[in-house]
Image (cartoon, rainbow, N blue to C red; front, side, top):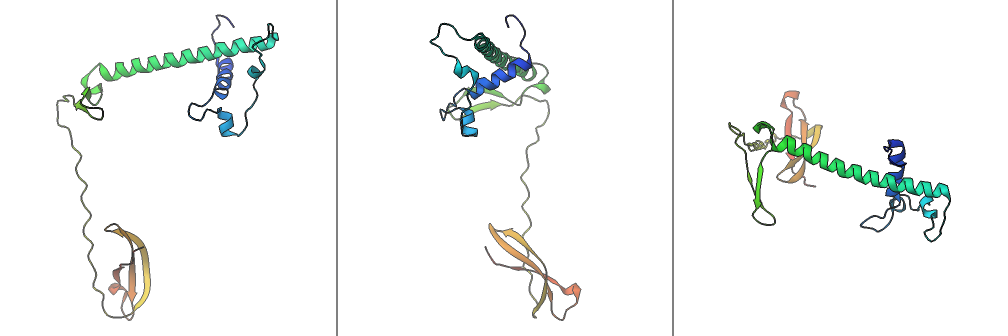
Length: 186
């Protein structure tokens, strides 16, 4: 496999094998052991380091595996550089409208840094505060027993959960049904 471009067919299985045979940085265990509870045995595990000669197939597989891992590492490094170049090209150069949101200056402390907003040539709309919901009005109950509860629902009032009931009063018409709140907190 010298001087031949790696294809997806040969690269991905070797990368999968390299990932499955590497140890997790925090736990110190291999991913299959963490996910499945057992460690699979790979052909690479059968390669003995102290022998003078090994089986040709195992040697070819070992060389292919090393080359695929090196190519995968190279592809990742190239992708990182490519993404950085694209980001710098799009966000740091060109017209003002395509630049990033702000410029960062040297940090003031370990937790804070000063940001300078670019001149956009117009006003910046600030986020307005959300209006507070209107205050609930207590309904005065007319005398008389409740005939039925028409509707019940949960509401949150002053940080407490409460039940609100729409009730129909006995010996009254439908247009005199009242909405009342019972202050049961949960």
